[in-house]
Length: 410
View 1: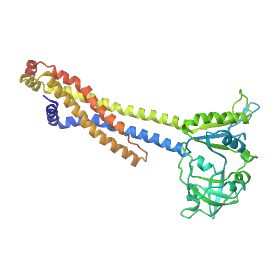
View 2: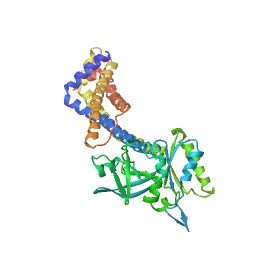
View 3: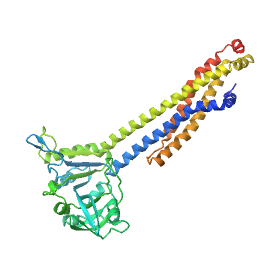
View 4: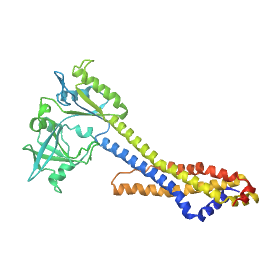
């Protein structure tokens, strides 16, 4: 008996008890669907995290002032004005791996336009800030070096600020007041979205660094040439680690830090942050898939149970087949094909259920999902393997029956 004939017999046997066959397949359907859906949810979360980190800027290293120790009391990060514009110039000049260096200062202010006002973040930046952060200007223009050197009162606004202050009105050329100082809007930045820690990157205004230090931002950042943050864009992602090491060594040398002393600055390599977040997301995806795979095992046990019942019910039929010439391997093939057919049909329906579940989660829960073709193939292949594994023992038991005892079975 060939496989095709065994398949036809198996399908006829399954159609005799349609409800029982459907309930047997249910475990496989749920298992395959759950694996596909959970992997899609995990992959979507991983892609979302990667996009949020990449939105900060590619190949980016960020430096900000460190702590200071006064009489044994360690103050918080940024308590000491340890970074300066001269540090930024030295990094750009002395480290060839660096493409762009952008010093900046940061503060919060109430911004007023006409009879509207909005509390937002104000950053003093240089023209290199937007290239460092991979940020585009969708209307107007960016800051110029002359405006920074001349402490001009010009500003660029993010999408959130533009929406809350101007609505549908064109912001370009309008005058806003930041801490009672008038600024003319020269540009509107493209939408960036939120960071991984929930900060709205579009809720900010960029003004010249010199203007911010003299008229808007106070505290340590306003002292001399001090800055609050230095953003560094490296030429190649493969050079991030080397660039980080060189930047650290240069700053320690410039700040005259002894080998036994701690850095007076903090340095963050966003590529490492991305790798850590992706690793955590991968673990989550694997965990979700492993939990969902339990349903496949339960479905396989259900197949084994039903096949054992089927062997018992059809003992006389098996005896008759053997009596007219069927060999043990023919009986084995018949029941094994029957088990595999159950699991494959369940796998096909499960793939459809998984695709539907992924789209439903994305639509109703507004949670991003990302379908993985390899996960679909793996889940379907695993369902076939479950049919073979759990169907082999009942098939072997049927093939090992004695024809005379099978014919006598009541």
